[in-house]
Length: 145
Image (cartoon, rainbow, N blue to C red; front, side, top):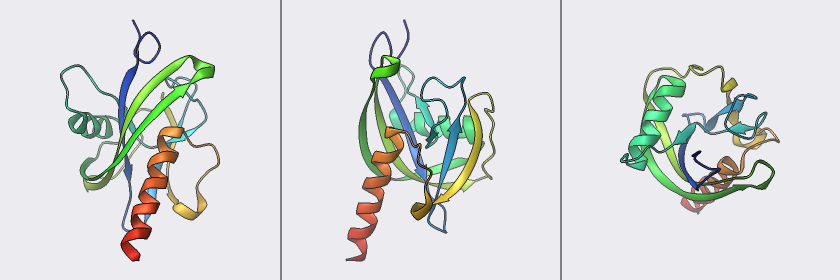
């Protein structure tokens, strides 16, 4: 049985934002679980018995070799990919890097990692990344008012 295909998968990830207010995104390869060629926040699946927050930190360490602190919850995404017959519930967090420099530790899954200014995001972004970006921008705007 496959997560996301045979039953609803539980995913998680983090918008990692730096001091320049740029977000770190990863471009998926053809060997990714889904949405090849799309840019996404780092993250992955939650394992049985694992807390979502621990899964986010584990996935970021595995993918990028950095330790993070979660600073805010950015909601969840009902990620239904009809063309790939997949359904995921993805929990989204905001995070800061607390140790290390990000590097692509899973080149078979991600062909590129890059920091983007929120005003110059790529066009092909996953739904599980677009939704938390919108929440982040709205919350940031509300703090200014």
